[in-house]
Amino acid sequence: MKTLITALVGLRKNSRVAAAALVAAGVLVGCGVSNTMTARATTSDDLSRAQITREHIAVDGTKPSLIGTYQVTGTDTEGKPYAAPSIVDISLAPSGALELDWDNGKQVGIGQVVGSTLAVSLLTKGRTAILLMTINPDGSLTGTWSRRTDRGYRGTESWKRT
Image 1 (cartoon, helix red, strand yellow):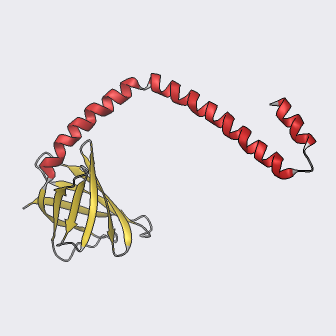
Image 2 (cartoon, one colour):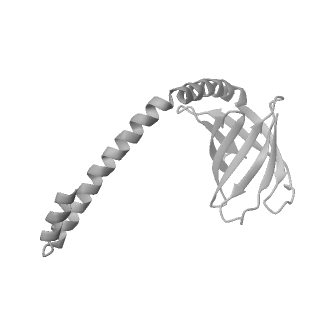
């Protein structure tokens, strides 16, 4: 590294060459650090990866049980109850993700099961929203949702199979 710095000092007149050399040195040093960290993480995380694989298998078994139609009730982000119940249909996409369709396509989303939680992302009224729904033993789902630009307030929802 000292040799590189000495050479760069001699190249004061050509700053582009100096900048290119510094970038190249940074890339080489960064790759070495990255490879070292990856190797250490691989050897120390074998148990964690096995646990994740077991959880993933259990999660995949939950997805088919969620497929169906649900009646949705809840509150908006201001705490006001929905005017009327709506319907959400859940189906399994070829990718393995869950597809969600509210009120015959007025809203659509994609969901993934993580443990006993269904995480959903959707677009509503031109804004991105996320839902975190707990999968209850009786097959219903309950949880909260938040929408971008709603200043941190959360709505609630309860889904009951129809």
